[in-house]
Amino acid sequence: MIDELSIRDLGVIADATLPLGPGFTAVTGETGAGKTMVVTALGLLLGSRADAGAVRSGQPQAWVEGRWIVAEDGAVAERVVEAGGQLDGPELLLGRSVSAEGRSRAVVGGRSAPIGVLAELGEQLVVVHGQSEQVRLRSATAQRDALDRFAGPDLARALGEYRVVFDRWRATADELERLTTARDQRAREARDLRSALDEIEAVDPQPGEDDELQARAERLSNLEELRSAAAQAHDLLSSEAADGAMDAVALVETARRQIERAVAHDAVLSPINDGLANVGFLLADLATELSGYLAGLDADGARELEVVQERRAVLSALIRQHGTSLDDVLALRENGGLRLLDLDGDADRVVELEALLASDTEQIGELRARVTALREAAAVELEIRVTDELTALAMPDARLTVRVEPLDEPSSHGGDAVTLLLSPHPGSEPRPIGRGASGGELSRVMLALEVVIAATDPVPTFVFDEVDAGVGGAAAIEIGRRLAKLAESSQVIVVTHLAQVAAFARNHLSVVKGTDGSVTESSVQQLNGDARIGEMARLLSGLSDSDNALAHARELLDVAARPTPA
Image 1 (tube, rainbow, N blue to C red):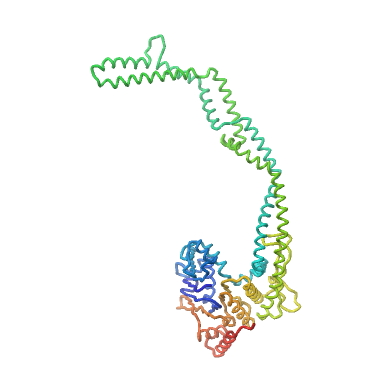
Image 2: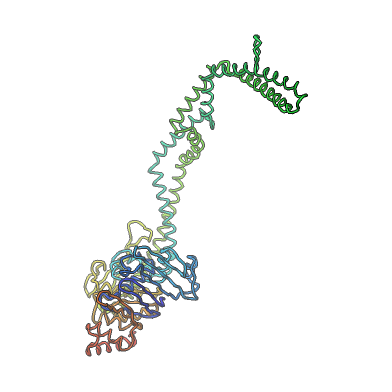
């Protein structure tokens, strides 16, 4: 339950603390005082979208903080720890700030956390009912959810088993449809891929072969120039010409001998002599290499160049067909086999999927029937209990009918369409509440459902925002009485404008509006004794000091204090 709620700079509320605690809390106040901000504050703590427009004018940010009492070993505490937060005994602090620029920050158990964590916790902590929830109750989804909640854990387990099989069945059906629809296309792809692999295999390209062939073609295209340059260089290094011209090897050797004769007279020349000897050896080696290079030059370069160019042409054709580079061709050869196995395996996969689909279809039928049986049994009981509640809510002749009808195709929530129908008067045809119920009737149907469902699917905290809209008189008194009954098993917080409802609360908070003429500022007061009687009188007549209104307020509080009829 929520033990305390603190609000700062949200809407017209500058700074307020709401002591809540167990049981039934009513929140009242004049129109425009800021009652709605209480629900807005709770919504922020439960992960609702932040609105920068809700920040109090002139303030940098709004801040909301709630202190919950939760089970220390429950799912909520476990999720808080997963988010990095911690509890103080059974106390859990949740916080939310909203800046005037629209930025928002969440705090869970003393640590910053994603806003989504607040939403996850909120699903386990609070159920909020406002005008939007009444609208939602008109939807088929909300009506089915109400029946499923009432049906309890047996249906929840059956639905869980059904959804596992249904999800598998749908995935199998999707894959089978994809394979069947694309069968011709995949057959063409397999044919083209097989042809491409055959072409590549016939050519048998090697990694880096295109670069190697380009280098060879460059060499062969300039063979005579290479031969001439190498021959001239060789002659300059080591000539065997008959004209007696000195080559580089002979010149260096002559220089070395000259220095060698002088070394005996000056040792400084010794390193120079050694260097000349090394140069002579190096020149001789280079001459030998050039000689070998000349000997290795192709005798039939033109023929080899033709072969190289032909090979390059074949590789270029492959590259144009299957990519932008030789690497693309090689990748296709490497990966194409696996893809071909996948494509060729379609026929076997189709047979396998058809068998799986048939098996899951049979299993879905069995589980669907089980879910339907549980829903139908729960529908009968829900009709009886809600109808009894409606009688207690000043609708003595009303009857709720819960219709469970088969869908044409199974869905993720089973094979049933659930419709709530209301017959408000004897002899009237039951009509779907989405079309036939007034706002006041819908309010009471929603409350009756929550009172009944709480017995099988308890919720820690209910928040009702003007659940009494469109209701007055005796019906309002009965709504207050049923809210008090709901508060016996759950915490109930009600924002109301009706004294008949507020009278049944054990904790009465009033949002009080004040102004200095230029700025409106609201605060929250806990009412007891005469202050509460005065607020009840204001709710009844608009006058907080009228003797008749005060007397009526006391009478109403006395009625609410009497034991609830069985």
